[in-house]
Each structure stands twice: as C-alpha cells, then as structure tokens.
Image 1 (cartoon, helix red, strand yellow):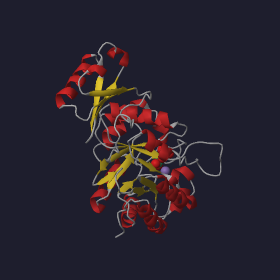
Image 2: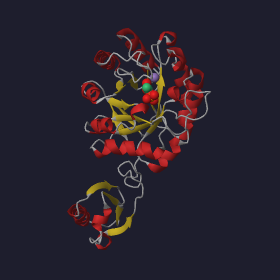
Image 3: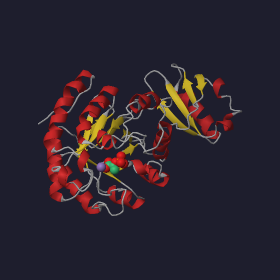
Image 4: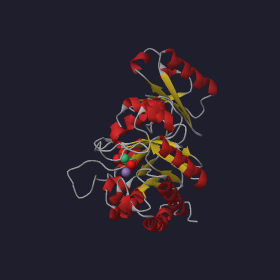
Length: 341
Ligand code: PEP
Ligand code: MN
C-alpha cells in the first residue's frame, strides 16, 4: 500500500504518518517528489487496521499495491531511477553501452578489448572472471587474476568495469575491484546471492533468468533492494522458447513492460539473446527503438579464438560499425550517446 500525501501536507504531517506506520511494526519507503510525497508501506498491512491512516492530517488517499515487489515498483517511486556507475549514469538521457569479451582470458586480450570498445564509444567494460558455464569442462574464468586485469584496464582507459559474481566468495573478492556486479541469468533466483550483493552498495546488473517471468525478475530486484542496495539495473538477455534459430528469444516487449511497472533502468543484451553475431545489430537497434537505456555487447579482439561465446562476439571493427550505425537512431529517440574519439 502507498499513502499519497496532499500537495499542501506539511513535514510534520508526513512525520506523523511515518511514525504511525512504524509504530504498527511496518517499514516505510519515502518518495518525496516536487509536487507530492508518497509514503510506501512495506510489510503485513493488516497490522495497520486500527490506525485510521486515511484520517491523519495531510493524507490524500491510500492506494493498495497488489504486486509483491514494492521498492522496485513504479507505484512506490515514479522515477526514473538513475544509477551511477563509475562516471556514467544509467537511466538518464544518455544511452550507456557496456562492451567487452565474454570472459577475461589474458591481460593482452582484455587490454586490447578495452581500448577497442572505448574507441567505439562504450562507457563500461564487461568481462567475466567467474564464468557460469553449462559444462564443467569448459573454461571457468581466471577469477581474481581476471578481476585484476579488469581493474588495470579501468586505470588505462577510464572505463568503468562490470563483472559477474557467481558465489558469495566471489562477491567479497569482486567488491574490491569492480564498479558494478553482474548477476547472471542462471543465478537470477539465487536468493542468497541476491541478498549478498544487496548488502553492498555497489550497483548491480541483474540479468533476467532464462525462464523467468517479468514479475519474478522484479521480485529478484526486490531481494537486492530490500537489503539496502537501491542501485539495480535490469538486463533483458533473451528467454527460452520453442524457437531454436537463435540461442534464446529476445523478449523486446520486456522493455516497455518494465518501463510501465518499474522505475529501474533496463538495458538489453542482444549478444546472449541471439548467440549469432549477425543478429546483434538489428536487435540492438530494436532495443533502442523500444526505449532501452543501454546495451551490453560482447566484443573480442579475435572471436574465432574466444574461449567462450565466440560465435556471438563482434570484432573491434564490427563493434565500431555498430556504434556508428546506432548513433542516428539514438538521437532520433531523443537520447544521446557518448561520441567516438
Ligand atoms: C554473460 O554475460 O557472459 C553471461 C553469462 O550472460 P547470461 O547470464 O545472460 O547468460
Ligand atoms: Mn557470454
């Protein structure tokens, strides 16, 4: 439930409502807009039954929030939320592109990728140091050594860095290096891991689970936010369907649906959504047209030698061409894009 205050409600009125809610053993989420103040109530609202909140001075109305996610809900906070990662902001006017290899394979491979994606206009370098591979025999990542190369690439290029974390130990280690932690599709409902990243204040890129509904995805965001970390960016990366022509099926409708339900920014990863490099550009364009706040694209200096996800990775030239081709569309959508060097 939310309590909508009248535009002329005083600070004292607001504090009285908050104290009344807290007295009943519930938590409060305050959203103070320029016009109206909204007080979100978190917890079992039956505990409020005798409090007559609607009669308190300054209260306009009580509106029920039927969804189980609250802090990520647009009804609690109209937004948009703008999440700061390094020097860039996700969810504002600017389209933010995160790019880099699927996995950090070596110092040279990573630094070369970092310079290439920076040159083409990316603001955030991606690179997996802990890889959640389908087969236990596939390359599993360089772990802390990989994080060190990522941090070195940040020093060299000024790009912010995002790395996936797959366990609570990885969260502890990655927290020393990264600007943003990624929760991968396979871990979207690993509630212990969600709580762990929620306890940090480090921004989280929360990918949609392979078979997750949008409501389940927003509840996963709620796990992170309810631990005290409001810095969540959602990433649509394709879902499992009966279609086998592409690795996954990009649910492009997730972009406007999320915009309608939540104040959190949403980016799209067309690389994992399709698994095929030729389809990355059309779906990147579709994502921008649908209103996404950014993109995540896999780029490798030599995709034919990549230890993971080579078939969907762009080489530096193809990535440069992609960002050049996206620019006019980004501007047409009324957004801006960090220019090429
Ligand atoms: C990745 O970003 O490299 C990755 C493993 O993505 P996802 O979790 O979306 O499969
Ligand atoms: Mn990958």
